[in-house]
Image (cartoon, rainbow, N blue to C red; front, side, top):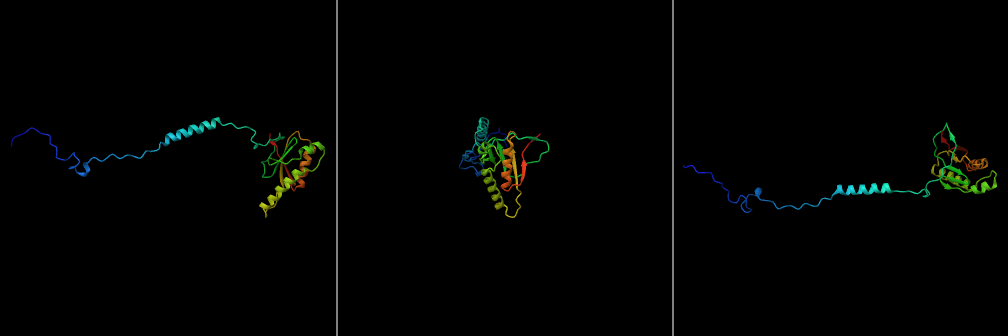
Length: 177
């Protein structure tokens, strides 16, 4: 047998669609569903959030912040208890941040007397507490935050009104020294 030079041979139908076996046929290109670009969206949201936080401005006139009086300092103090907080600053008397009124009339009379609006508010709070806790004993504690410059007759009036409303135990609010 004579020796021949090597030749390139291609099997018929190997690279064409018709005759090629199934595994060798080229598949049609699949169109992938578009993926949402979550990284880019998160970056944009973080930038907007950061911008809004930096640019946030709040005025002190929102009505949610009650004026805190200049209470006296003390060394031996305890934490606040869960009780109605009566704040007295000048002619303003507040119970848990809402106005109880009667401060102007009390300062005008210049004598110790019962503050009717404060009495009504405290008595209502006592009745509500008793309805919410029918089996519990009423603690009868009221916390007083009184400004240092408040006259003594105003302090006496508030204490007497609290006692008449059913709160025999008074806690004075002070700041830690």
